[in-house]
Image (tube, rainbow, N blue to C red; front, side):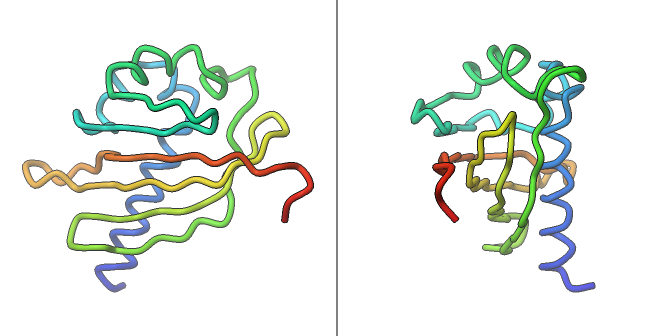
Length: 128
């Protein structure tokens, strides 16, 4: 397996982990997957900082086993540089569709992956 395929697959695995309700409901688990300089532009257009998203994530959709869960599809990834992966994919959550983009960095110290940036764009229901 090539380095690019291997690193893209690792980034997809941690992206999926971040969608797990157990991780979303746990600030300590989510903290492991987000870089301290993390930023997000959510599907609402709101800009989130690291501290804001960690505080809000346990209350957001997708954070409970019994509630709506993210249904990801169409993952694609590109290795931009060693240890830096750009992912794109789509999600459905409670009937709402979004196109998503994430940047993941591998930490040199221990080789773990952390999300540096995330953006979600809502997809109108009549769109392809």
